Image (cartoon, rainbow, N blue to C red; front, side, top):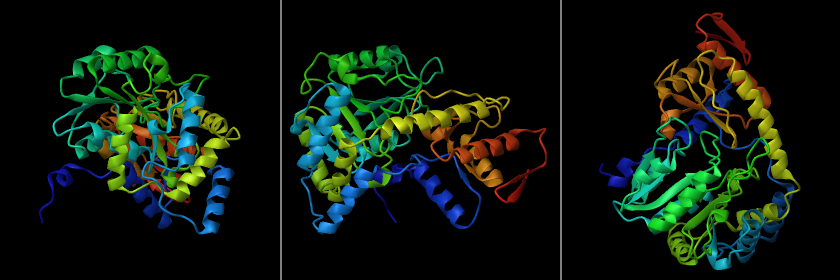
Length: 402
């Protein structure tokens, strides 16, 4: 059977595949610990649930405009004004079926075959394949100093006449690194000078720890929104624990948003009316839910990092945000896929291979699950990696053997 060039070049999402595998194992009664997850354990805000139920009861769950309902757009406008200090118009915003779709339609609107999309290493697992889906060439930039933030020089040297977009994700999935103001400000300047669009994947921008905050990209430019080369991408999935609702958004120049809306109208029609209705309620009525989530996640981070620091030979990098840490396991096995499979097979702990994010020898560990699972998962990893430890480990009602 013959498939298209795109179908042959795209690989399955590693994180979604691991989620599915973990679900199958748990359904079979296996005591799996999932440290590869990408969704908070909390519940969606009650206001969002109530709004969704109220709409369902009317039976009027219909098509909406391709770029979102007026109420959803107004919620995005209010959110942007509150957290970015800019008040866009309705023609500057659009809703999508998750932030992932917003990024995808932005790439489809900007990239022609052979054009380049530049992003730092480590990167979110989908960036390279999303670029290829748009016909573009992914250009990952590995920091010369081995850190999780490239220098401006690293990024500038990667820009060419074919560069159409730069993708930045801060706080960063998978590392939890929070890019500093000098770097973000410098990237805004570079993109403006070279007429390149800067796509700011801000899905974790409010999940920052230690009293810090993510850099506001709009504070780094003196241009009006329609003249700036900035597109901010966000959504309700992470900060409101509404991953299954699939509502994201984009804020940017009106001409680009219009082009993105045209594409989306053919790609998926419109975001779910029901999900938009719930998202509007969540954005309007937080009740400190995001602050509480950050406090919860910071506590989990501290516990996980303290436990990981007790494993000799493990390179621990403390994340400044998100709910992930990217640790260097290369001393134990430089092949992250092999090590991840080993952990799953021997102690039934799910991790994500670092090679999927451009960081071979590393594993991404998530601390957004129950604290008991965070502790238990690290305990099993520590046992398996300790060559001088006991031959057996009792966990989850069964005995693991080396």
